[in-house]
Amino acid sequence: MLSRLVFASAPVLKNSGSFGACVVQASRSLHTSHQNKAPVPPLPEKGGQTRHGIIPEELFTLLYPKTGVTGPYMLGTGLLLYMLSKEIYIINHETFAAACMGIVIVYGIKKFGPDVAAFADKLNEEKVAKAQEVKNIAVASLTQAIEDEKKEQWRVEGRQMLFDAKRNNVAMLLETNYRERVHMVTHEVKKRMDYQIELQKLHRRMEQEHMVNWVEKNVVSSITPQQEKESIAKCISDLKMLAKVTQSRATV
Image (cartoon, rainbow, N blue to C red; front, side, top):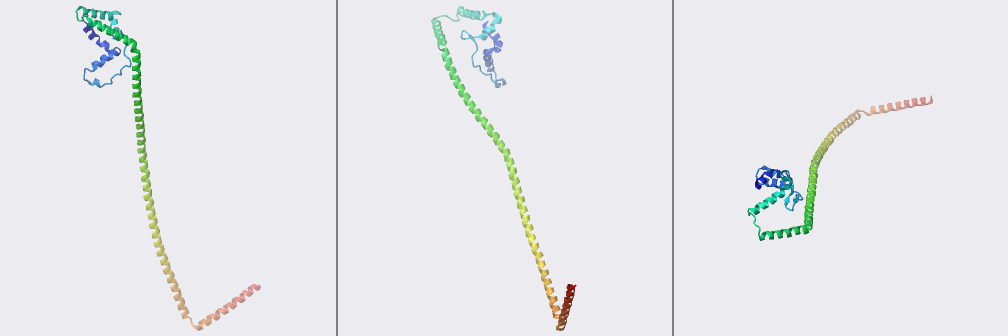
């Protein structure tokens, strides 16, 4: 009867609180489908509500619609009486020892439980703080690594621009060298052409001078002494006539 009740109430327990989450986790671990790769829900920081220290509140909530408020207690009492009447559980000295131990444990929990819980919470908070510190350091280092990577990517992009600038500089240097060589060739060719022109002018001038000297020499050699005297006399007479004309103009 009890086993049937447990199996019948299992689907309802899956939909209720932390106890249902435990049942879902237990059912998940029994199969090997792809659902085991699904994200596991986070564990609650605090346990669910209980009655009498060990009985989950979900069990009472489950039985209230069917049995009423006294149903869970009657179920527990009937189960205990059934075990005693069928001698499934026999009361002996171990029962009293277990009762004494339970009383001592309950007293210890009531007496020292809050202090132990506070100490455990403190240890847990310290562990969480250390873990958070390690996480923050890791996040900061990863963030810095991301920023460094972005900066390196930016530098790689700038490196392309730098390479383009260097390529342009090399092209400008090559163009400058080419123009300098063209200018040098042009200058040298002009110098040679000027030299040839000056050489031709020199030849022409020397030829002219030689021709003039030759003509003058031949003319001088062809003049006789008589012709020379007559030409001198003719020049003297021309000069006298010019002198008279000049004096007459001056007087007028």
